[in-house]
Length: 160
Image (tube, rainbow, N blue to C red):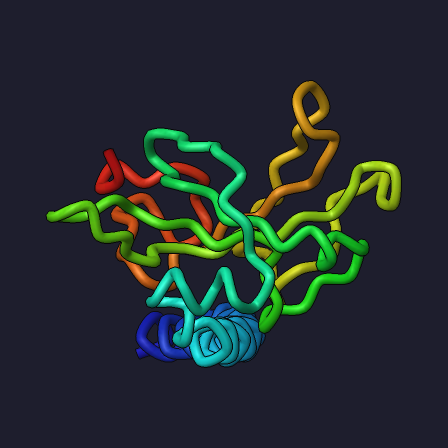
């Protein structure tokens, strides 16, 4: 009987200690999901590339397999992370030559931040430090096309 009581006590304490961490993680995950929803709502209008161009996004002639065609709004490269104002829209070339919005990308100049910038709430987003080519911190969010590797992964195998 003592063994059973001890087992129940250990299980109860484990639930308290282990259960506390996921609650914090869930709160962070909920905030991240809300921020991603804001990003989706703000960029839904850009499914039509003409609307993106009308709002100041410019095709910069950069196509990267696994990312897509980059449309940049240079005026947003100011060191401020705003989920609703991505500096880059990523498009995939679809059937008939039609462009499909697949992801957004956030940029912060390395000169403005020695460490990875604060981005989405929590630790799920991963900023990439591009020191050689552009001198930017980069964060991709696959909010319009599922990325099997994860929403914040840089490359998506579904984008040729």
